Figure 1 (tube, rainbow, N blue to C red):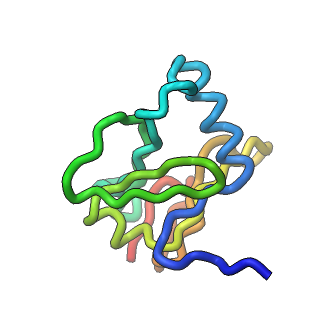
Figure 2 (tube, rainbow, N blue to C red; figure 1 turned 90 degrees about the vertical axis):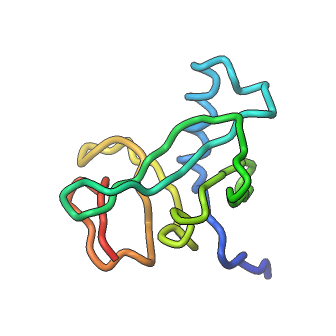
Figure 3 (cartoon, helix red, strand yellow; figure 1 turned 45 degrees about the vertical axis):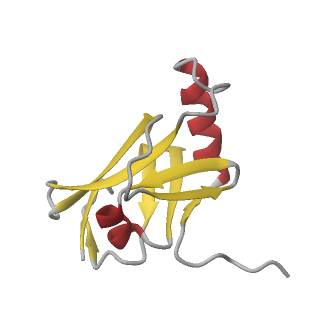
Length: 117
């Protein structure tokens, strides 16, 4: 039986596939210096919003993780909100895009793009 890592950020198979596709579209899929930067910023209908982007610069206080073959980096402050969160992707009729299964969120908005703790 495999052991689930704690204090990390997880990436589902669907999210990995979409991240790979977006990196191919941006012509950075074969550049190992690029990674997915995940963050939390103030705003949104629940108080905090998620932010995703590709980056190739690691800052001194960044937290670096790898799950399911995807390198994920976040700043230390955002990580406090994101610990043990799973990044997933939905392409269903009820909404399309990345969403976060965040065990730290006490409340999320209907669109899944903002939350509060």
